Length: 548
Image (cartoon, rainbow, N blue to C red; front, side):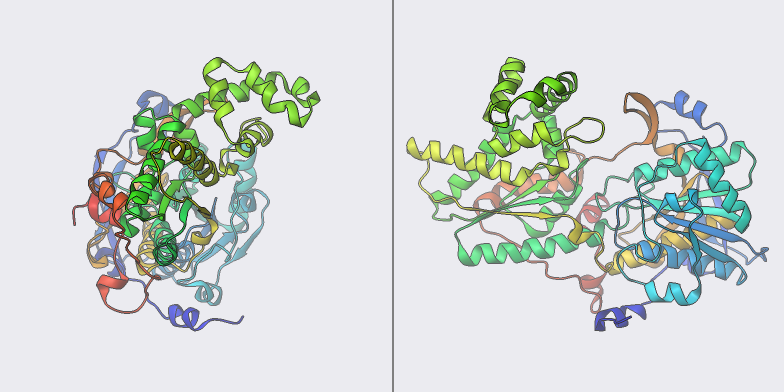
């Protein structure tokens, strides 16, 4: 395998560990019993064997000889930088406990467990993937572990391989599945432990015990570098407005973190749009006003950051989409008979007055996306809507009207970008390399101490790594009941941007100045070698949340 100079240099990097883990042996310090964030009675009834367990932290302890054991690992859901280091930390942790211990990787996600598709991960394989991006060591997948038949099929191969514990590395849905699996195996007395690790670049899997999900740091630094480059170009050519859509369907953490790093002229935060009950026109007017104010100073250029899921957070758009979903489901046959050129008018005639007016105001291409592109459940595929183009077209229309009225004197030309996959498999930053390795190592200690239904937790992450606090949090503690496909299901509660939180407040205090001034910051590429303040910096979000 051909390697770049950076890959060769990074292979030699030894991730830093919290003091308790670096000692090689730990003792468990149990805290108070826990309860779920909401719907306590319902969650307790669904998870009688794994509910109410205490929070735990690790302290340095005496080495104990443990019998050999085998461990399984699964990468689940979308990729995030640092996954390979979680596996490396897990591998090193179980080998430190007993060199005879073995690690098996299930291929292409949870489906590998059900289909008995696996490989043993040996030292030579692990060494090829240390400190690298991606999930390609064993691949990932989005199979949901929900049915008893899947649990039993998985148990067959677990039994055959003599696996004592399974580590599932994933986001909120994947860790919900891990919790369900832990409960099932505990109820059956199968003696199989299940541990989760918090992964998602979207940053929406977090709470007091999970300060950040892994991959968020690297992804935001990757996007911020490219946005900084665009802003440098923007300030050089001085003739384009760049509309940049960023990952984050369910929360705006990425857009907010990138805004704090690069200081764009505009950053829309979906949670604020929803809280203020803003319409699509309100959002468009806000952007257009910034464009017009800058044009009045002779600056016909700028940057606008947009979270991927914005459309679903606009209350009026949410109502329009809901009515469209119901109407098209009930009238699919009739709609299918209508000529494409007449479909728009047909929809406008059939919707309620409020939704009809909104639908009529949308650019042709977006209106078509709302009616044609459905997912298997008949719902609009919101992620396919080119929100960046929708907003720039509507801003252009509004500015043209203002020009007629003499309210706008500039020129408006837009460029469009969507940064998504570019950040998911980047080589992990030092922070993510260290954090992920610590999460994997922590998982090995949770296994050694007989825990199940726990998620690996590493806290105090704005301090040097030696001062990080490793331990575990019961997954049931993060759960609530939500409606999914018409049924109430237990799921990990998504963490949205808090409008009263320090990161949003810091952004809100500066955005009016950023809007009018050209005060761009250029973070540059991720640095792996050099001074600590350049290489090991946590995200602005973490620093502000922990006031450090």
